[in-house]
Length: 188
Image: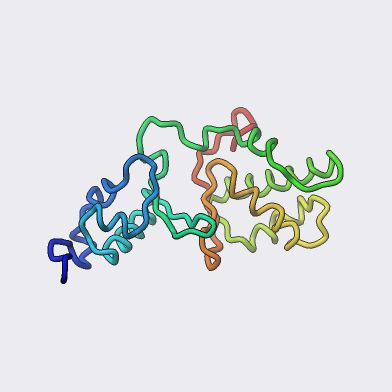
């Protein structure tokens, strides 16, 4: 076992959730290897336990551009800190940089992003092709093809509060993690 004699090997059920979660300091992201080292388990065990915790929404995984995948704890895991969804969705959409030759066209495109957001917030989870099938026909934003429309909507939708976008090319499931609030019309 060369140096790993004291590490727990492969028995995920025997690893306490807190043992892995305690590896995180605040919201600082860690690689699987970093979690394994801090928790005193093998990378295989850490990866399996992190996958379990991700299924319970207690950790998240992202792959920064050009970097290795990292794990992090969502802000809501730390108690009373404000969640990202407390930021106004309307303000976030208004601030989006969208393509268009006129103010009206840019507004249509922001409306398309808002329509995709509203659909996801209502459904909870949505597969990518469903956005093209359900949202595009009612909010085309002057795009002639749903693929061009999605190429504009997708990168902007992923920046909105409460959105958990797919991180791997093979993943197509989008999730909404925020709480629906219909009171002010500004948030969903």
